[in-house]
Length: 428
Image (cartoon, rainbow, N blue to C red; front, side, top):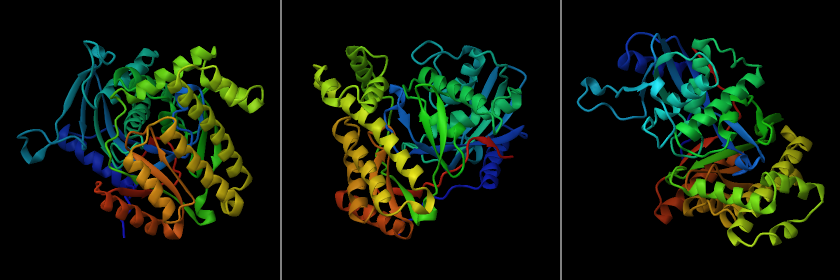
């Protein structure tokens, strides 16, 4: 039977990162904070088009132990980075960044590698006028890296709530959604400008603003959120995540190209964003055919068709989940939900062209093994797929996917079950 990747408890994660801190940086941290990875139920490549998406926070989290410093230096160590060459006992390499010298990617002050994420958060918060100290930070995580489950945003958001805590910024209160939205915006700037990854804001919003037992309906046009109850267990269902182990990269130009085409298509249509088009379709003031006929470029037509129909699929799935919550998600409602997931994958594969052989096989094999619906999730070009399955058959579906990968000569996939968890917070 295929093993499911477990999530660490808060106590386990805190103990691990405290031990790393003591070994690599010395002494005790001021505290430990954690932020979740996320899986997107539906609404892919809509966030940078002012659209709608429906992510949920994973129980799998990134943990940071952080201590404020009296200077403007950041010292950083990660359990996910190789041990320092020749270091006694395999001690992890400690990176050092001058926070006053941090600058956008591609410039003279660019930060190399993973430290760009935490250093970028400090840079963005300072740019917003917040008193951010220097810091020592140790990072450890059970969010799968490169799986399209937002491991980078989990680092950013864990560091954001940690800096909020030691700096007394007052933005990360558990019920302060406005403050958390400001932290999320700083994390987006860190990823876009300092790390150089042109992502939208869904990942950071999910990590900082989700609630346990809910999916987060995020309207990226204004940053507003609605908590959608999401209790699959009550209906005997589970959301199986398949990490295909296919390399997942967002900084190789593919993601940026999709964003550029969407922006050029919006300009050609004379609208601020493709959300305007999606809303016009929903209102019945135009048709998809009329919109596409106004675009001469076939690439633009295909990208626009995905974005506007994906926004509609988000609305439709929210309607299904709201009308058939919890144990009521059966029969026709379950079939509708599954069909929306299937339709999303087809659109991403054919019109947006961000799937790959491993993702397509994961989806096909899961459906053949009894999944009610399946789709790739995340930015694409590798990463993960999700399958809506009967909880009792989750292991059986995972086994079927694993056998299909072996027959195709692909790397062995990994699996986890996505249970909607809470947002970034102090844990010790």
